[in-house]
Image 1 (cartoon, rainbow over the protein chains, first blue to last red):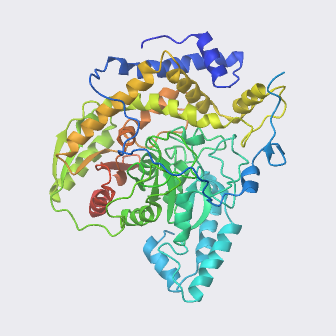
Image 2 (cartoon, rainbow over the protein chains, first blue to last red; image 1 turned 45 degrees about the vertical axis):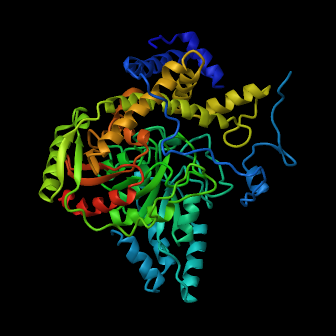
Length: 98
Length: 475
């Protein structure tokens, strides 16, 4: 696990997460993220033979229901009121392909 | 002034001795006169008075208005509530109007409670001091140069300031217990799934829980009883064998309690150490059988948490793309640029840090080494808790290693801020209930607290014992 984060990786992570970071911020993030990763790297030394990962803690199993719409009283108008730009009942976004 | 018990307030409203309107008047007056503490992001005035009028009319017509009739409360600003904005203390959501209400709020309203305001937090719940709020820093009512703890700092300060009889908050890694400890009030984190997360802004879906902050255990029990139970809108919700949590059990004469050794080794401040020792002595005197117990993997819990947390945060915050709701940057030449500009300007530094760490630990090549490994060690921690609970009714330790720290003390070093959660996160990883109880003051007159933990689904037993000892340990 003990990999070192690089400056290029910080730039790539920001892009993957769709966040713009300024050139002047990169070194700060590199330092902080490295410090956090160094702290969590202690997990690499733990012996976990035979143990399974925990995804949920209360012993749940899948909850199935029929594939039918249920009316929970949500109103379209209310759901659309926070949308920055609408066109009729559609969400309007910028062009995707040039 | 200090508020009487919730039960007596509701009785007075139901019997016509007082009115919901006068209670709302009082709460709003309190909020206004305490504005210097920056505990409250927004006030819900119009809707609160409309609800008060309804409740008073109901009582006048001879009907009962519920277990919480007319009781004003404050919700952490990550609960979707009608009547004002729901911001999560973030620029991303600073203009967001809840299109529906959280189940927890609906249930409290159904029993007559009235939400009068929204309290400050670290933006999206990311932090332990409210210093990561995009709007303001809440001051600790016991010393305004110190933080109230976090992320639910505003909710805890609200009770310490006696703005309302109770507040509600979320606890993902300690966000109810830690500020309750710093502010000298009672904070309860229930078993994972006991309260529906529907309509609460998601942080870490596998550890997010909701609970009350209150003046005493009885009030907290009443609130959690109303909030809890299965909900179709959150398929992780559970019912307890006995959902009547507030009708607490008879006193336990000789509970078996384990004092967690690893918590005593975590660099406790001398006053914190002396306090937990004195609490243990008092509990022993009262009949409890207490001994030291080891949970060897506990010191790993913070590292596990700070892998799982950013991973789940990165996923949960991916919905904020600036298109459907939230901060939107109009000036972009294509969709990707709009995503980037909206997210960069809408999120604060801590959210961005967590998103990037989360993106890293979930990325191919690192997933097994970080995310999966953390999930496996989570299993180990849970197994050790389960083993320990075979022998003990409860576990105990300090809620925090220090009392409230100074504003600015940790804010320039994210890792040192993370480390302040060291005593609380294991409980969230295991999904067990825990309560923070005030246990006196340190030499700086700052509140001290202990944390009592129980096995999953034993929330009622935990609250019952907490009630039994709360008067004893605070002396």
